[in-house]
Length: 254
Image (cartoon, rainbow, N blue to C red; front, top):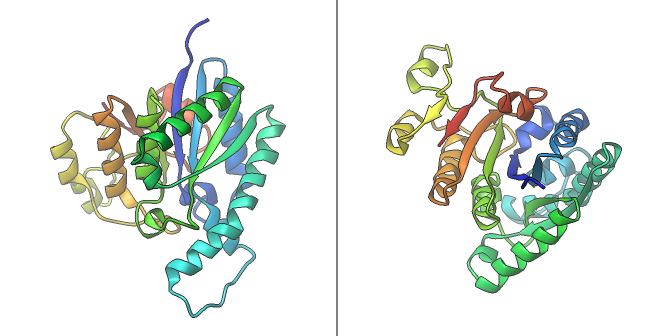
């Protein structure tokens, strides 16, 4: 049997909500549909944000604690709902899924890293799609900055992914000049990281906490592990399959 291509797919909050205030079941259906089409040649591991966005749909928390603790509480409320939505929709497409909560400290201890690799390999071998999110109840890194971009890159490196796909709300990375001219032009291929960093415009997404700078940081981590990174517009339908067929503009970081 031909070895399947291992893809680490990172989905940010803005993609999951389609830039609204609600999680888009239609977007999760789009993702499930694409994974189902590719399952004979690719195996997927997902890093998904969105727990806080789910909770905000039906909960308003009052607290004297800092906003970070409120966000941690919202993540705790929203995470089970987020996984339930994934499981319900994926099941309709014949896909099995599981939940894995990780934090940065897990990537610093050898025993933890071994456990992560062994557990996720068993899941993938048995046709389960691991859905990873940061354990926001005990860690605040992604809440404060990053929107799971760095977590996705660390997971891709640890799990020997062949490709890291970061779904965002732009057609990849645009040149700084084209943004100033209000005519965004995608950088399709990147070979020099220093040149790329000079092109990045600092901005944050509506629900996420990352912006393009954190995606560059993630791509650098995966590059050091010899993993190619694609930054793709996840708001579009069929964004994974269209990228594979080069039907859409996106950024490919070699």
